[in-house]
Image (tube, rainbow, N blue to C red; front, top):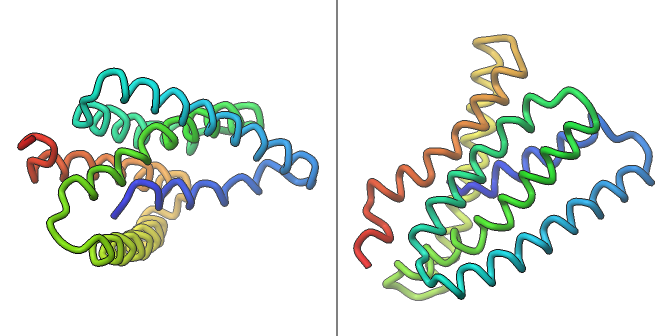
Length: 168
């Protein structure tokens, strides 16, 4: 179960607010600018400080929390602002998600990446079933989306409980 699975899920939610191709293109251009800024910021800071553990936990939690206001957004302006923040947080967290897997692998890199993809697919299936179950129980799409926004918080918690980055 990886955090980026949830980001992909929420990116499909854009179509509730954006109806024309021009607005959709400009919106994704806006998100691309945020992703580029996040990548540059992330590379500079991590090269300067050289502590992956703190970057991993801070950015994984920030990325997880950035989904909550996205779910609660009721207007196109709010959606754009919170999508930008979420995309920025995703750009900060994603390199450390991959680095953590590569740093703690003791096997062939192909096997590790294959396992990562399998668990990513299982995480996608899990969140879809979780959303459907929550919606079925509560009859509220908002409640289901809020719970699914909270699920990514388990990722840094599980990494911490497994003592990842605490050993090195």
